[in-house]
Amino acid sequence: MVDVIIGTIGGTVVIIGIAAYLGRQLNQNFLKKDLEDFKSKIQRDLTVYSRSDAYIRELAIRQLDAAQEMWLIFENTSLNGRKNSIIQSLHDAPYFDYSTANQFIGSLDSTFSRKAGLYISKPTRIKLFEFRDFISNELLEKYKDPKDKFVTEEQVANYKKLRTAACLAIRNEIGGENITIAREEYIR
Image (cartoon, rainbow, N blue to C red; front, side):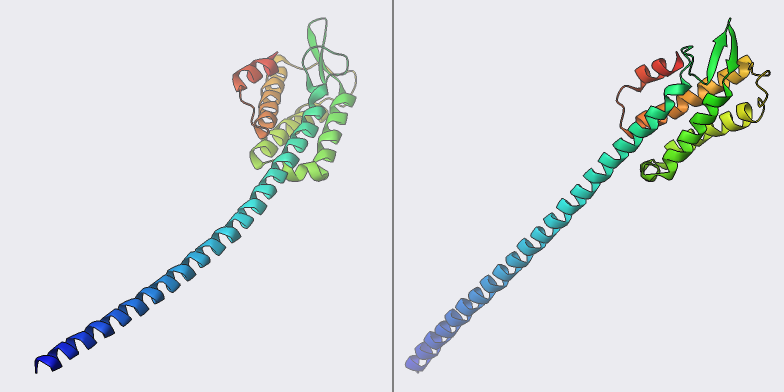
């Protein structure tokens, strides 16, 4: 009887050993498969992230180009008294240049109609169009007669405020870091 018990125990141990070995092998195979699946997923994700990063980088470059294009249009909006500015000063009485304002509106609208308009964000677009609408409604519509070209101080103040907001919005498109200096630049 002892022989039977020892034989049964020995057989059981062998079976348990074989089961443990097979279980370990199965576990290793499953673990190996899980690791391979995980590695494959990471590689797919990295490829997607690489494409995503490239896409984001491309959008950023296009947005910078669009902001630069918009910035160039604002040359004639300066308030430094140059002859080709929309608002000029004639013996300290501010006046409005109809053709320069009309040219600015045309350039702004034209730029938005080209690909640059695709990459300007909604907040910047709103500020740009507020400035454009002010020039259209408060200057171009009201001062069609060249003899009637003097503007009020209130109109000049509104012009400055809207111009500053539009310029800062463009600057924010490119991630301008020192907006305090920028605000001071535009107020002048």
